[in-house]
Image 1 (spheres, rainbow, N blue to C red):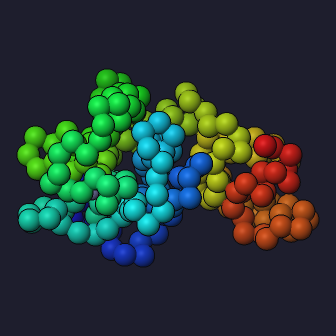
Image 2: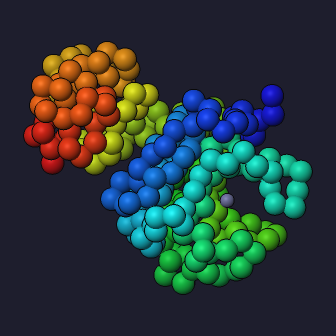
Image 3: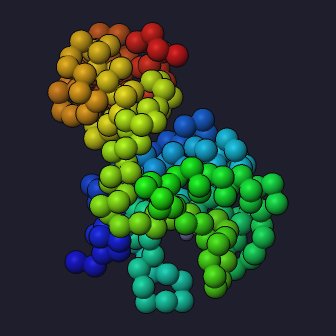
Length: 221
Ligand SMILES: [Zn+2]
């Protein structure tokens, strides 16, 4: 099977790919579930600190080869996103202001694990620039270790993101304690079942996904 950075190239509809809302924005992106905390976290920060993300202008997973090449794109395993594409078209350099470039560089520096930059920006390509493009640029083992470290070292505030099966982190622990189950920080089938029951009891749609309405009903945020 073809792979990139140790991640398998996936077809449309793959269960390894998930759709994630970028917190604070109206944009949802499809990326590999395993690395979503890194990539969606970056997109959230981009939205806040670089420029607002526009709905319909951003995308992620796409099983394709790099334009004009026979190599797989990082989009093909769910490890890349294109942000505000019409404003930052491929092949056009310096579509960001100096201030925006500095803000992006700050974020790229923030997403570092053991001295390695986790994300590479298309604006920094040595050849054809691709300002809209951001990709995971480390091996799978490093990326997964970074995700695990993110979950504990920089906990997300409870209620600040939507939680679903497969998520990990300090906010999952908060949710679990609200549900009265063991708080191990790992959103598995038990957490999902308890959450559905709780949502039903609270008069919410029992979808097993903790979004803003569920957080509010649980008294968080
Ligand atoms: Zn791209």
